[in-house]
Picture 1 (tube, each protein chain N blue to C red):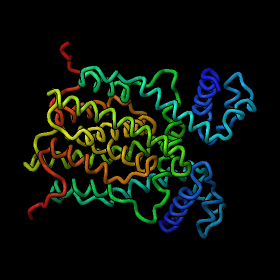
Picture 2 (cartoon, rainbow over the protein chains, first blue to last red; picture 1 turned 120 degrees about the horizontal axis):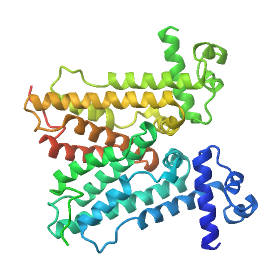
Picture 3 (cartoon, one colour; picture 1 turned 180 degrees about the vertical axis):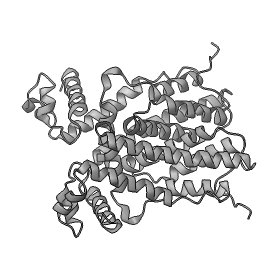
Picture 4 (cartoon, rainbow over the protein chains, first blue to last red; picture 1 turned 45 degrees about the vertical axis):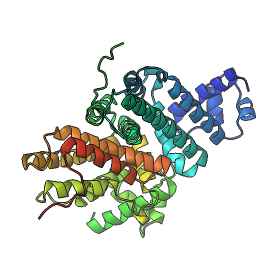
Length: 196
Length: 196
């Protein structure tokens, strides 16, 4: 399948998922959100699970593309991760955090979903651990365990997601607490100007 | 309705929810898990939403009953909160964290659920903030913002819940990170023996 077709199906999946939820998601409803027939979508994805697996794969790629490149100053990169993770929701993403929450609740019953969430978690933790390692080596951060800092930020991100959905709380509330913790762990306050 | 009837209905709701999930939950299935008819359950709860609201209320009460009493040493009380929040799942609670995750995903569409989750969050944050305040006053903990520490622990708890469901990760992983953070914030390591 070409990139354009894949992108169209995945965007339609996103809209259908946000609108109807996991329980109400059908290939017909995905087709309704696209210019394609449900038969054409079935031609590319045998099952709904396969389609959602591709949707989650795409999510990981889009998250990675939002991160600042590895060449930048570790402090700038850490700020970039916090922006990517705790930034306000896009205005066009209504229902998206809810849809992801529903898919998380499905993970115990769908091995493919669980693997994608584990991939995503591994990517996020790896990115943060690399930044902390680089920042400690460059003397920007106090000595700290990169894996533990990665776990702190990632778990707080999981918590912020749950709080956005269940409590309608803005992730900025969590970001503030994360920044305070990082100040203690790394001796550095996120958001501080980095000298060229 | 007497306490016994209420308890029987709520226990049956727990079992039906764990087994069939939110989408598959019906009053008939709750009746199947109890000695009552669906008509008898409907007599006490008009709607499924009302019943689940009572179920969430009960959850908050059970959480509070697991906490050490306010008279104890703040360090013992903080350990008790960490035990209640990050302890291993009961062997008989299979599916329970998944069911709660599904209800969180429903919160945007059910004001009653949202209110219960906000109640629960308020209780947990209040308990932790009180402990930190008492511990700082008694000189057991370094000076710290009680509300921010409460937010840290509560959000990490939300994250641990999501990770248990989506990644099948044991909450002890999160507890370790929380304990490291508390050592930096409070100058005290949870789990340390408290002298009589």
